[in-house]
Image (cartoon, rainbow, N blue to C red; front, side, top):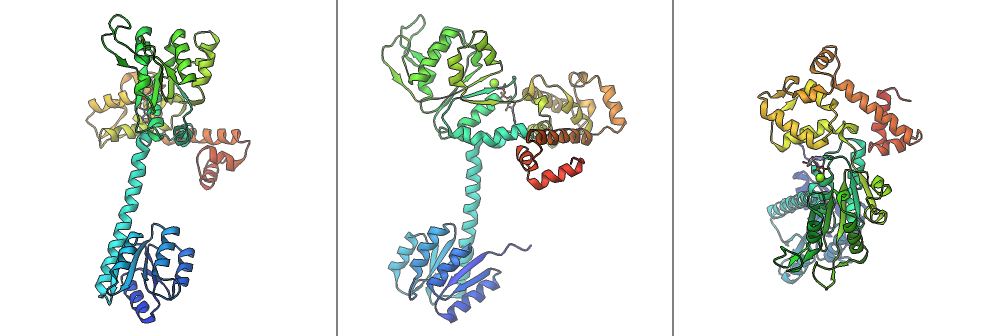
Length: 452
Ligand SMILES: Nc1ncnc2c1ncn2[C@@H]1O[C@H](COP(=O)(O)OP(=O)(O)O)[C@@H](O)[C@H]1O
Ligand SMILES: [Mg+2]
């Protein structure tokens, strides 16, 4: 296996020494550039990126420390090995403090340099992998959100910026479209991730209880208040409070909520002490909150407060491209080495999914439970799914007639290409951006479908 050549810069004023090191490293398969003094070395550092620099410490003009310092500034990922004359312990300690990877004493054995170079490069590789891993871990739930459709991709694209902000977010969408998932992601991707994420479902609790849960209470504030209790607002301080099914909140409680949002202070029930908190509010609903404002069941001023950033999750039937990827995601989650055959997949893609992704996951779970096949076929799909596309027989017929999954997906793809072109007024570069495609691949697809 041929590995990509790693680049090494050798800065050494003694010509003989320079040539020996260069030859040795080239034999090891590295790409080696040399510089005869510090000034030349810095020029090279400024014009190329090296994996590693080996530099003599003692040189006229810019010395090894000059190289080290400049390298740390302009290319902090480059590993540095220093060459010292024997018996200058002090300067090597100094070099390590300044971030050198290591040093070799002159005169050195050839193996010494070879081993140190390889170690330094290994460490560099590991650090790169670690930082990638860390990035992925910090992204948290992000990679668990499946998004193939342009609309979901767009939501994922803006998610990090939404997470950075402290503005309220109102997440709308039918039940099962991923509102909880997105709320969690907004918290986990943002600066509040180490503080609490507190979720409360406004539909589950009677009004009085919801109020005492939100604001907390003092012993004796009402019958049954046996001790002092912190409310969710306190628990969520510096973090995030997620108010799910916000449309179900009573108008009285809406007023109290609005006051907390506006002033940042509230009192526990039965207390006269103001408590100040700093909480980011996310809320979610599957209702049309604007309609609720119109018919008077939701306060308009609160609506605007909550809706600073609207995030709408489209129903699954409007983003069918996500379905195959979601199914794969669920299979992986269950560590199943199974796959859905074309016919079965087609049935699932065509289903209306009133329960959206939650329903899809349940069905996949059920199919996996009852099927022993490696490849899931039409027969494994429950009747309720086949039912709403006018029966299994029709599907079998269609498959028999050569109606293939590709055709269906191609139809979808073409639709999106045309829609994007429409939205961008025919400007291709813009349409490509809308779809999250490179211009090249966008053009390629247009050609595939004979779109001008
Ligand atoms: N884009 C997605 N990728 C992967 N899983 C998803 C996605 N959207 C939703 N889910 C999963 O579907 C289920 C329902 O999502 P949830 O966030 O509870 O929906 P909602 O709050 O809108 O009712 C959850 O198990 C969730 O993890
Ligand atoms: Mg939910």
